[in-house]
Image (cartoon, rainbow, N blue to C red; front, side):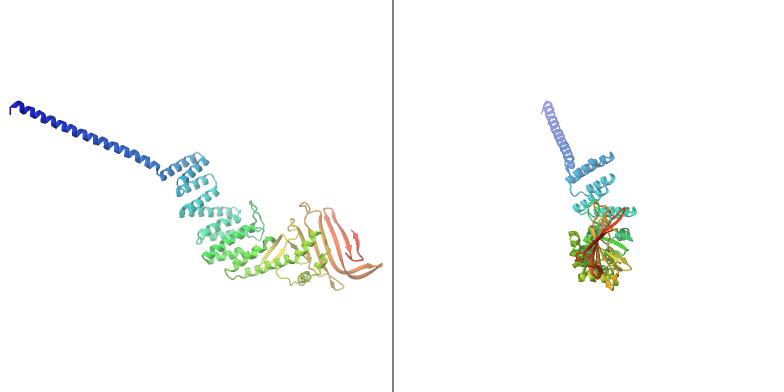
Length: 442
């Protein structure tokens, strides 16, 4: 092989090597480009997927809510939190953030409702604990501000339902009791902004406390229930239409254990129901304005027994002397050293009454014969005390003019007294309904 051929072969081999290297380089570049493309595509896809994750979307909505709060745009902040919850209805952070927005905007009630709603949805104990802390803080603020109501007690009972072992709850229950039940309280009769009576709220709250106790009997809680069920203060006013519910409640509480005060209170309430039943007939007569049947009521064994017990001082639980009022609207419970008594409100104590009957429980004899007396004061006209009318009925032994002579005999007298700011006028009828009836005015 000559030199020329050797050179040619060398050149060919070098060309082949160059082409091989070029192909190798091209392949490497191709692979590198592909790899880079893959990396780029993967990176872009990761960003895309990352941005589509629910927790990321929730976080972005909560970041937006924070920005709105910074500008005091609370409505938009709440809307952003709601959007976050639409993405993930069990986002603890979203509920917590929304509660924070409400607190910042001074809407504590909404904040508490949000925390409770969050706990119901997520069962997160942290949200429940925050909710309870807010309720107790509210209760402390209301108590310290002398604004304790059954709504305050409701907050304490709500926390009690979640955590029966909280020492703070029992301290606040005691504080609520001290503020709600003073020496003389109308808390059972008061009406809240929603038109609900205090007793209705009280009845519901004590039943809730009982339910907590039944699930987990705890002596400390039972003591609270007994205390709230039978307030030891001097005078507690009660609407008469709450009597049956109160008796029902006392029965439930009594089932938890023996308590002498509860026993006495129950007997006192039962006596008040008994009195209402006896005088329901008299109220019907008086409201009809056809007064003749009152004679039969006055002569009934029940009425005479009531009169005699007051005269003799043997009436149990029902307190009163001389003129004992009977009202169908309002009564007061009185506790003196564990001894319970009641009395119905008279016209002065409850001017809004629909009418008050007065029993005459004083010893008034004529020739050794005890009088039978009863009177009735109807409702005020147009809400004004005057003119104030009293219908008075007396069965007595007195002189009746017969054939020009006065003859002592049992007869009825009926008097209508009308009081005005200027004075009182009376129309008196003697031997009322009898054959020797007479009238006079003065």
